[in-house]
Image (spheres, rainbow, N blue to C red):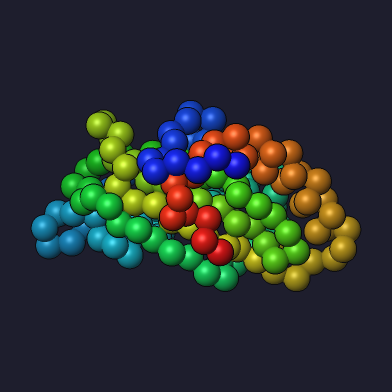
Length: 149
């Protein structure tokens, strides 16, 4: 995998989840509240698993969010999900949150999700679905300080 110093945006990585920053998600300055960045990333992770045909439950083991730029209320968000790896430890992904219409990078999240107990057969089925995705996502460069888990 190639590293870069700037994020790579590619339509291939766009999540099917694209929420808008509703008034309940803003602070007193009418900016996107930090707690809801994580919720938006979680919506994108759920959409990624659904789109990949993974209906097995996962839970977040760890995550790290870098807040890069404020997002005013009312903006639509575009999120990308890049699967970096998958093992018995779980899904390792990097997500980027862009604010529309300028499509500027507002935040990045790196997360590790672990499967909630499953049979060996279920875990093998998940692996079969995810390995081609890992391979196809490997061609996209990551900034050097991402992929830290």
